[in-house]
Image (cartoon, rainbow, N blue to C red; front, side):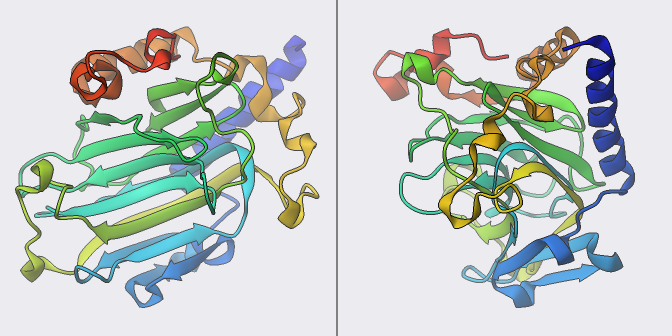
Length: 297
């Protein structure tokens, strides 16, 4: 890519990031999403730029889904998690296909007792196979203010970002037998639901339903993606054009982290990782999965 094109790409990506941070984005929850579960527990205001999702009982949470289906790109939102005693609650932001052998890329936020930190849970499914979890303690209070959570996805890799800092990368090693999502169109989802049987300290701490409703707040949404329908794919799936190297997310510069980003990710992983499936030898009878010996950045 020539220097003028590269400079334009970098400027465009920077503009998207800045726009989300200040709330100047082209999408909003009202116009670009549907409430697909328990709509009475969702509220929108500020023209659809502010959203609350409430968990009111063990069986009544809430879910929002983007209208767009897509393959590749970047999806971002800002979230302020449930305050106080959030034990047993799970707040999410993720992408997923629909149907059998699904693909999925997860941010899940596992609540805790008052004064104890949240768990930031990440995972990826390809062809219905997941079990690739990494978990982190946040280095900030995710209930005190909004923080930007971004999933970036192209044919090279998946990257998870918090406030523009990469916390994890999962690279495409499908040529070496590691499943990677490249074929199924996804939606973006946000939700809150009850999981007191496992979410907090392995299920030892239960939800105090006297504290309900538990409310998570979302502000702004950015869907910088290859929209399957708009690109001519429709119900049949996303067109070949979504995999074109001409797309912004397919640029060579975006096929791996920069040196600065890699330093940031290593610092986060060194200081805040609390679980890594690649380090869990007992889970796999003393071995690890193949991708664990391959570079992930």
